[in-house]
Image (tube, rainbow, N blue to C red; front, side, top):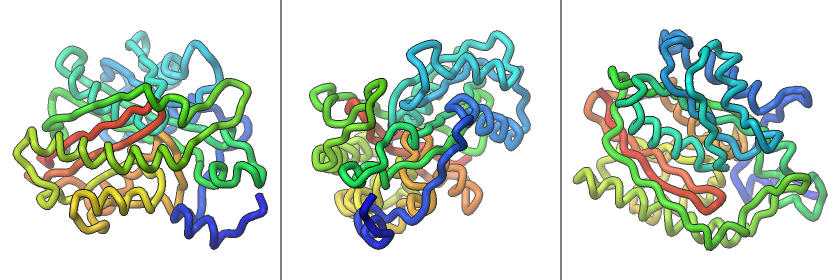
Length: 286
């Protein structure tokens, strides 16, 4: 792509990314993440009352990957819904899943992306292609409780910017990077302050901010807008690149392994993506 590793690091903070094999589908990635999540939680597929699968890079118009993922996981006739949102899909899934636990008991949220098929690898598109990687993550929400409880969430959308980040069938991803960075750096801090204000919390009280891993510089700008140290924002973008809707759950899994929730400690999840869709969620360790 007529570029260097140094330029990529300076522009985005990315050093490596992962690409799925040619035969691996979005659904296949989602199944692996879902199986891993259920095993780690000691839950059986039959216990899942609702499956939500977020992806902005699914291979076909319909059906979406959710039904195939449910079948492969062994969830029987459990309702499976697609959340076709790029980047912010997992956050929307977590927020909606928390609300739906009262009706369905246990909600499995999976996000999977194969972004390597969505970008064009040439010099003209290097600023976009170098950002994205493939991956999947999952989280289990239960009305019966767990390692943390969802305190509150806020979700927003603004279709006035729908053309600034889009992926049409048969075409490579198109992104107005300036608009995306500008809007994200304004809207995400406001959403975080909104969800914290509703709970009577301040940014300084938050133990960790788990964000969609879009760009290291964007994460730093959001930290500055909230007047908190960038070190409070967990980051693994250097290792995986931007895996769109999967990135938030991959980051949460790695943070959980490294430190995890502790009783009474607040953690914020936040994301921004195509649409534009964005929001924040406040969780507290149990």
